[in-house]
Length: 115
Image (cartoon, rainbow, N blue to C red; front, side, top):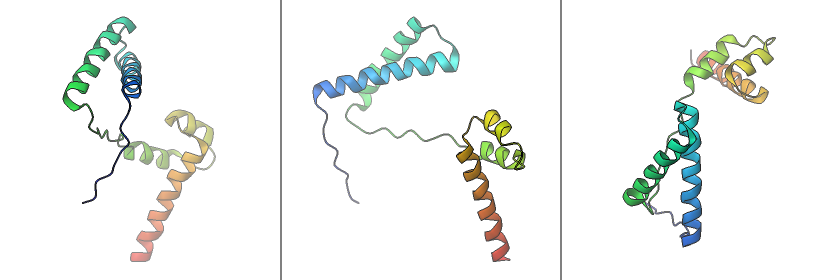
């Protein structure tokens, strides 16, 4: 197994990263549960302190959300004529709609070829 070496952050860079993490958490808490900014800030500060104590210096992997249901919905609804509607409904770009639908076409052609 190969270890990846990361350049260590200076004390100032580490503090900047912690401040950015706290700001991100405040935004997330406000958006997800509607918490008032002052309370969200206290909450975010506590979480950042706890993370730094428990995981400081380590790497944290945060998996991306599963988008398979969203992608299936896009494939189901997109008929080639309703692009603007699908883009707005699923909050995706024109390019993303076509990429998702192209993956369906690729899977379909692979299924036919294997039969």
